[in-house]
Length: 197
Length: 208
Image 1 (cartoon, one colour):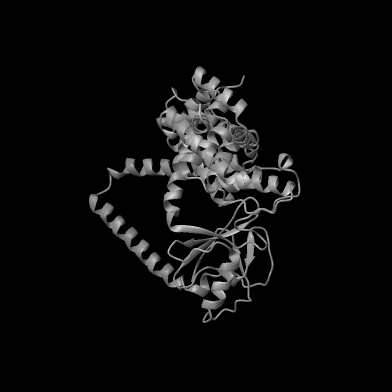
Image 2 (cartoon, helix red, strand yellow):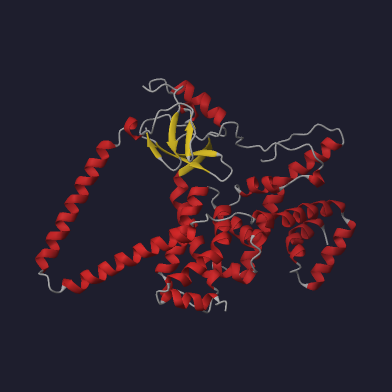
C-alpha cells in the first residue's frame, strides 16, 4: 500500500532511511525544476537540491503535518535560493562560451505562430526580479495552486496574484519586439531582430 | 471599459479569477478591441508553453547522495551525543585544553593554505584545447579581470554554456567580445601568454 507523505515523514522522523529515500525520489524532479528555473546553473542547482533534502531531514522534527510536505520542501528550497542570491549580489555573470551569444537568440525562419517561444521565455525570465520569477515559476511552470504558493512565499494570495500579473506583463514586454519583428518581416518591412531590451 | 483597465486585468482574466461582472466586461472589451486581443494573444502563448519548462530531471544518483549525507550526519550526531555523555567524567581543564589545541591547528592550517594561494599555483593544467568531462578549456583573453587579486569562478549551465562569475566591482561587459577587446588592451604584463588556454574544472575558483 502506498503511504502518504505525512506517514513517510513520520517514519523518517523515527529514523527510517528508506521512507525518507521514497520522499526524495518522489519530489526530486519537481524541486530541481523549481531551483534551476530560479538559478539556471546546473552545479549550483544540484547543490541546493541536495541541501534542501538534507535540511528537510535534519529539521524533520519541525515539520508540521498541517501543511503539505511538498510545501515545506519548496519553502526550504526557496530559502536556500534566496540565501544564494544574497551571497551572489557581489557577482556578475559573463559568458565565455565559444560562439555563445550573450544577448540575442537566433530567430529561426518560421512564422510567428510556429515560433518556439521557450528559449525566449527562458532568456526573458533571467531579467525578472526574484519575487516575480518565483511567482511565475510556481504558478505558470509548476502549476501549483495559489494557496500553496502563498504559503511557500509567505505572502497573502492577493500578493501572489499581483506579482504573477507583473511577471507576465514583464515577460510580455520582453517578447513583444519578437512578435513585432516577425509581423514586420512577413510584410516586407525591415525590423530589428533584437529580442531583449 | 477602457484599454488600460482591460490590460491591467488580462492576467486575471486568463485565470478566470476576476469577479464575474469584471470578467464579463473584459471579455466584451476584447471582442471589440484588436489591440487588446493582440496583448491577450501574447499572454496566452506564454501561459500555454510555460509548463513545458517543467521538463528537467534531477540526477539519477540523487537519492544515493542524499542518503549518504544523512548517514554522515547521523554518525556525527551520535558521536556528539557520546562525547556529551562522557563529558561529565572529564575535568573542565581538559575541555579548555582541547579547544586551545583545536584553535591552534585551525590557525596553522589557515596560514599554510593562504601561502598556497598564489596566482599561478591556483591554476589547473595548462594543456591546450582539450575538453574532458566537466573540465572546460577557455582562453585567458575571455577573462574580464583587469586587476590582480580578483577571484573568478567558472560555471556551466545545463545547455553547456559557460560563464565566469566576476566581482561586481570589475567593469561589467555585455558580451565576451567586448571583454576580449578590453582584456587584450589592458593585460599585457601577465607572465602567462594569452594564447595558452587554461583547463579549469567547472566550479573551480581561480585567484589572479
